[in-house]
Amino acid sequence: MKKAKRNPLLARLAARLQLTLDVRSTASTLPSAKALGRWARAALQSGVKAAEVSVLIVDADEGRALNHDYRGKDYATNVLSFALNEGEAVAGMPLFGDLVLCAPVVEKEAAEQGIDLLAHYAHLTVHGMLHLQGFDHEDDAEADAMETLETLILAKLGYPDPYLEEKSV
Image 1 (spheres, helix red, strand yellow):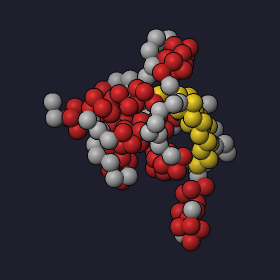
Image 2 (cartoon, helix red, strand yellow):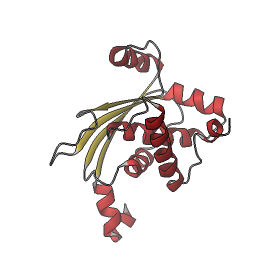
Image 3 (cartoon, helix red, strand yellow):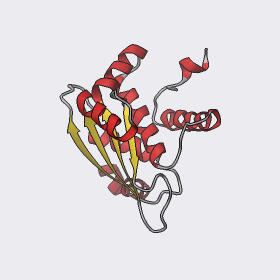
């Protein structure tokens, strides 16, 4: 935070997002609140002047229950996004939403894909934040646009393209 105090631009960017973290996972390697905030802020689009986001990190049982209750899917998934306003801006109101990251799923995917665990957490945080802002991947055009944006944001954060392997096929 020392840099933000010296640099007004960094202070304004930091103030755009209020992030709360609740860890209900027993996983040994988890991202810090600072890292999650950095990744979430990077994904905020220019039209978002303020955001209040909570991040919940859970184990498989809770992840499965949430995915079942809210999406009708009976398995734990890597990230769930819950936007208060379904990605629609409400004049004068901050963006409100929740992200749920399922630590065992994130760890398993990173290991299977041979990627750095924190890079995968960064990708899923960016992905979830874009969902909170109304982005989706229901059809090919939407998926391409969202993946391109994710890749650009992650590159700015110093992470590799998470879709590189898919693109080479």
